[in-house]
Image (tube, rainbow, N blue to C red; front, side):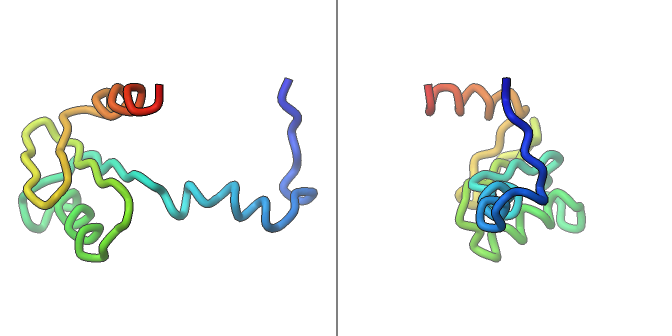
Length: 88
């Protein structure tokens, strides 16, 4: 059984490390990515690219073809399957 540790008793450095994947993710999936300027999905992907996001960007949209160095997929399940192949 996994032991539960309260945030108050955890060392500050440990807490920072535990939150690192949330604030510095290695991979971002943008659900609803779009090529249409003005749409939120378009803005999110565009801003990640413009800001030189160092991780992997995966636009999720079954109708999207991405031409900026990222690979669009049609569903999150595709990403899960790729991850299983890469790590297993």
